[in-house]
Length: 335
Image (cartoon, rainbow, N blue to C red; front, side):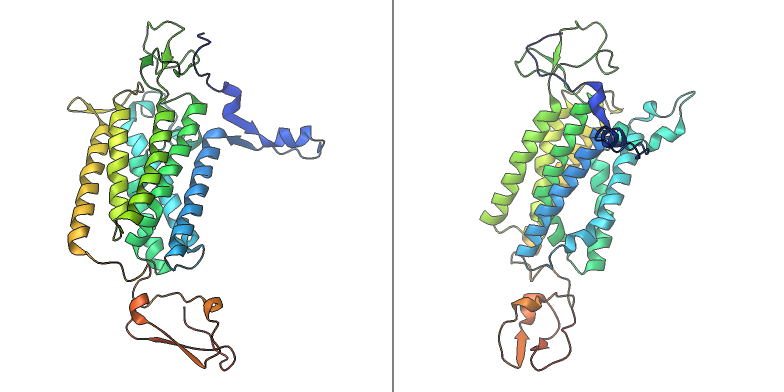
């Protein structure tokens, strides 16, 4: 094995038996074995980071704190389902062959969540969740975009622990050491061969992309889904390049890996969103809430006047919302 490359985590680090760890601490009465996979941990960590950042961005625009959780209850399960279905559909040879165990289709912890599938069905879930929460979907998508890039980058660390989705051979000093046997390694390569750490490239690309999206959103006052459109362009460009160096088997369409086609589609769609929304909505959004769904922060109503009049233009409602002060009213504003 080449000592100069980046070592991959040992196989035993791919999962952790929490039950055994608890018993090692002296709790012999705890007999339940709970196994947590590193891949799943990084997926969950990425989701958590995305939720925290998205919440901060939505609240900054006047949304109720943590309304993002109401949307995530729909978007996350839909996204995981979409990611898995897309992966299985684009890697049929891994799941449909003589003697195959059909149940392995559901073994998400083994790896295999396609980002493009997660975006498609996760978007459907987000539309449902946003609608039920009274949030404009495009406002949510813009708030989510930087965090989504970070979540995808963090999730790639799970591929590192699973020793999968690495790139072609390289002699660069940051080449990745992959344990043998590994079905993705071409036959005949020397044991000392190093490979491009594609997971690290995508992680770095996504972190830079998240910073670019945040900067561009502020610099150019991007709203109406244009930050999300820029996200599609940024991720599509990076993914198209990374697919050209990956060694894992993939379905081909006209001799091109299916995920490169997906990346091209993301770029085109992103450009269409940015251009079309700039023409359709040259001004600022009236708010993050749908018409008539405005949330009012009661703690911010500090005046002692008998009535407070909330500007309907700020919340995009049909008429002014009149809220009585706590000193003179027993009722609460309809949120």
